[in-house]
Structure formats: structure tokens, C-alpha cells
Length: 85
Image (cartoon, rainbow, N blue to C red):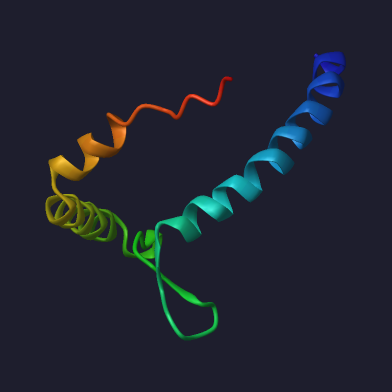
């Protein structure tokens, strides 16, 4: 058991150091721009609990309704430019 813990400890440390920056960027990407410090306001508020999650989900649905399905499908159906000679 001790050997297993000694082997896993560096890997857990690497995973933590790898995932923490991604989680920070993910939280900022779900935020709105604001002229303050920090320069964003969180949309997904973990401190509000379940109500915060429901507000985030409602705002996301509203945004997707405004964009519309035609916009989402038109960008996905574009073919890449052929750069071969």
C-alpha cells in the first residue's frame, strides 16, 4: 500500500497542476465582461448553489435561442478550404 501511494503521489500532483489552469480558464470563459477588477462577472455562481446553476442554465438557453439553430448549423456545414496545389 505504501509503495502504491509513493508511486501515485507524483502523478496526482501532475494531474492537479495540469487541470487547475484549465478549470480557471473554463470559469472565466463562462463569465461576462465587466469594467472592474477582476474584469469579468461570473455567470455560473457556485456560491449561489442550485439556484446559481439554474440561472446559468436559463441564460445559456436564452443565448442559444437568440443565436438560433440556423447559425449553429451553417458554421458546422462549412467545408475547409483546399490548399493543395
